[in-house]
Image 1 (cartoon, rainbow, N blue to C red):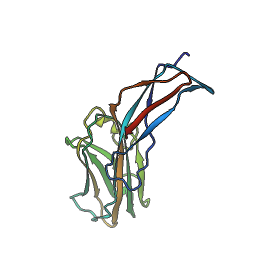
Image 2: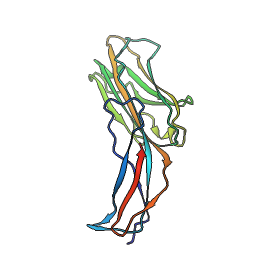
Image 3: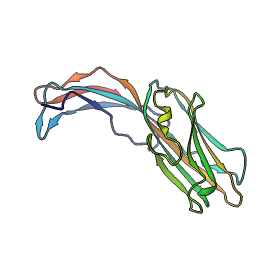
Image 4: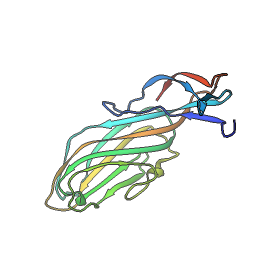
Length: 193
């Protein structure tokens, strides 16, 4: 069938209770065109690294040193895509500067004193769109090392807490491809994700 060459499987994720975890599980399925199985399609799977932190750290009011929290990644892989989420309780998000630092020192500003007097910053930042700098600056880099999230309150009168933060990193690591059978079915066995 036209348009079918290679399928790359990225398993679903859940960040509940995980700390830079790499999970393992079976990956199997069927490649279809409409309701008909497609034979002869090459299928591979990629890895996904999940980081999850809930430090509940105070963010001092109008303080020059940021509140920092770190997460260590030991699973090797090259970053293809990254998403970052933050959960910050604060009575004036326009006071906040939030940044993520890669293990090599590259920093991405996620939030920089926007949002005015709104309460709380609960955001998911993608690799292509952020209010300040794109996370795509991490694409092509190794995921291994210590990642750091910094939150700074740069104005007086309001305080808050860094409740939680985390990331989902899709890497370029893949297992050997398999080819779908006569019914379009494939089984990659147990995968790391």
